[in-house]
Length: 272
Image (tube, rainbow, N blue to C red; front, top):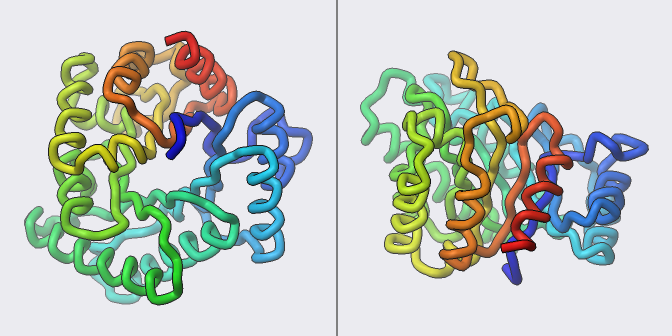
């Protein structure tokens, strides 16, 4: 990636209409340079609209990413649910490719009471097949297993880094709110250790192609998202660390006020 870019998770709330094309145009008008397409409840973007999104995003210098549906569980007990999960991930990547997108994020799954190593091997094998299927279709975009907030969900920092070591075209999506929640740690030194681990194990390519989610998070059983100003996420220190490590890629705001926090982050970054 050419630089670190910032954008909202979905069409900005202040956009005059809720469609993706308006969202891309409005994102650019806000001074932002990335936008995540939210397929979280299903992949419904039509090819014709995706092709137009690619053209408009290129004109406005907006990098597009996507969030695959929440329903994905590559470790489900039922094979039918695994098959459906694979289809949703493939469909997300395919339509993002048509839209000229860069990176697709997904929640890998749940442990479902199974040993962690068994879960890892199962999820790894499925992602390998997904990457191969996409490659056979000429699609090369980053596939991003996300760091997850709940201990019953697959997606520790080490697990997503290991997947990235083991599978071509896979890199982590680092969600700082999820990490803060899962590890009960908000110290800058802890976040530094994560960036060091990424750099040491995945190299400069990973540091210069990071896909990051950031928001506040409520420390309750649901782990609801908060605006950064309402939370204890040390976002200024996180940005300082990203600058120190020479991070490039995309930072997506998942705060309830998606574009406001994205603008705040970008303005602070530009002052560093």
